[in-house]
Image (cartoon, rainbow, N blue to C red; front, side, top):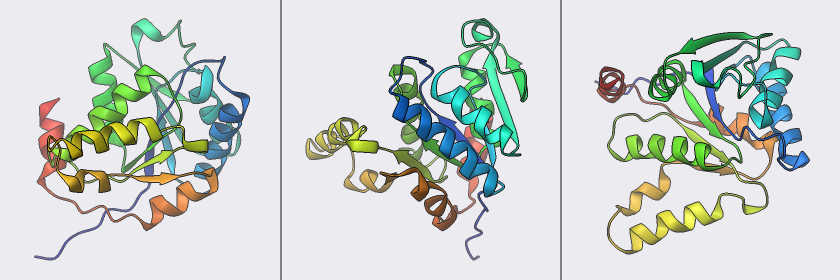
Length: 200
């Protein structure tokens, strides 16, 4: 049987929620939101109106894009849920991440803090376990994510992670590279996605 490839019609964006972030990161997040809207790619994100996530969602919505926010109830006030876009309130962080995963054909990781790091590492761990083959693109301006990639390589060098894990993602230095990378990515459909869905 031949491999079936899934189109990238929806993208989950993981990113920082701090309003104190570098203005260049906030501007890049907004640029990504506009790029996704222009490409008719649905944005799925953490539901907040703060930091990079708010900048990305507001820009996508203003540009006519489809946006879905998924936010746990305890963060509705803290992250100022963005009421101007479609959003779903869930019971906890695990449900949030599973709903985001299930709705997305691909993932983009923008600069962020420990929460973004946790989301990205879990996503790549699932790739390592062959639970999905969805494209993952890191936006790494000025080498933002290089320390993380170096840590991954360290585990490979220690023979704790297979070498091919380093091919589990692609990296974009510029925002205008992200959508072309998503469009070029091949996403073979397999039973892995179903296994992850059942795990939730």
